Image (cartoon, rainbow, N blue to C red; front, side, top):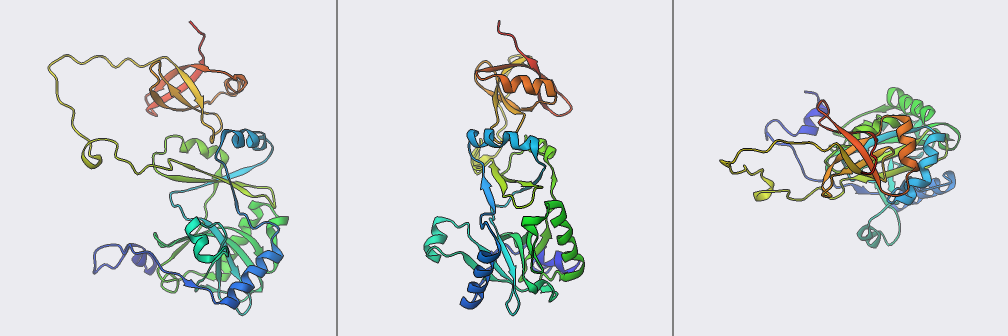
Length: 325
């Protein structure tokens, strides 16, 4: 086990992982001022993510998905993204503008600014800005994007794919990861997937934050959450699964429905929630056929569909429109 894995999993002598949150060091006033001034003067927009939280917003960007290329990044952490700033004669500075109400009261409206200790080359200190999410509870820093690289504004002028090449150059030639120097923080680079990977999130049960990153230069990313309130007891004592009482009565056959009411999932394209005749949720289902997808989108009222249970995936599929009886 290497040094990074030992710190991430905890000391072998203690036989447990260290779960305390890392306390970051606040930036000195001069360092904070220099970082904020650099961001203000070099970035046109200090908002990193635009939240999607309504059907109207989903419909608004629906046409955008057909005209532009997006990449998907999903995470289970609630850490917000911020700016990691490298300036000459200053230590690396993490700046976050998206604050909670409590954080705004503490900072009196100013962004949070912390200093980090990193091993990077002097070329990066010519003026570089990375987008990172810093999770002090899980001891993790994820490098997601680069806005300014060695004094050049690459966010406004180059695609996300091109900016990824700068991140690769940073990792290979200008940065030496050092977990101990970072106080136990493990650093990683984002691994985005194509937009089609959204289908893999249909049956996710845990809290998940999803980012939709546009390939186009100078555009904000979109973000939404799945299962935002998953901390609840489903059944039994403290969530334990209880064993049903055996009955002497013969069991009824499990007859699966062949049609259902479909309700659009506002945050995921071509995904619908299925309900039986009693209003009970069956599952979420994707539409795989292009013609069927177009037909469903043209329906403005109640949507009734024919469904089939797929034994391989253990869920229902929409196979056509259901004619009213």
